[in-house]
Image 1 (cartoon, rainbow, N blue to C red):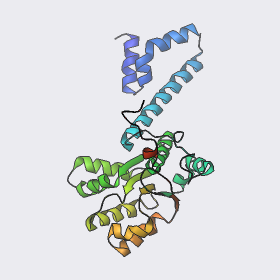
Image 2 (cartoon, rainbow, N blue to C red):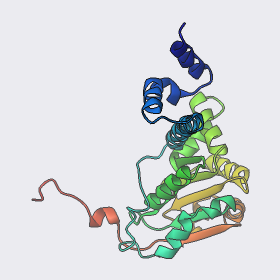
Image 3 (cartoon, rainbow, N blue to C red):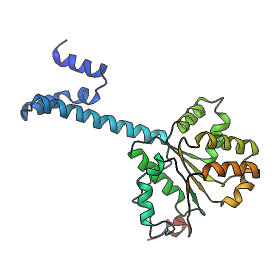
Image 4 (cartoon, rainbow, N blue to C red):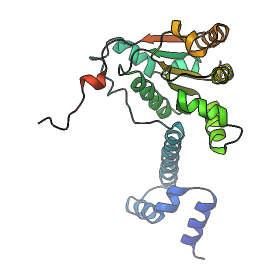
Length: 249
């Protein structure tokens, strides 16, 4: 085995993918630019770190399981005036995640609750946080089948290992008493261990009917709202206002 083959072999063993994939180009560039040993080593390790960070980010995005890509820049503050530019900027600083604050986004369908939640989730991923996104319906399925399904168990483990958990569409579908108890158990586990964003079309006054038990509802709200920002989003549906037609010219 010659020296180049040994370098490639070592890069595989040491898990240095940038070196393995670009060894010829790296050596050619070093010769052309007459790099010092220090500059050569610095650039090599710098690019390894960039590649590792990018792969880590891609893995966090995949594990988050967002239904779509939504960004803060695409959030239309002119349409949704219930949140100010200053408030949005403060949320994007993400200090609330370190402080274990929760966000509750309330309002009718189409006002931007899910968009804002997903956009903040992407911001958190860019900052290095582990994030999990799940609809309330899928969450119930996951909790009920975690003991018998490897897929559900893996999903639940990712949720429990996240710094930010986004629970979307609470209140859109009815839940059973068993599901309400499972939801309470999850909220209790996440309490002061992770930040939670919940989007819901129902105000707190309707959660008792949703969860089916006043005491359970009080216990859930007590944990969620202990450190919490509640944002009530008003207005018309963005999707209906900006709907597209097959027959528009």
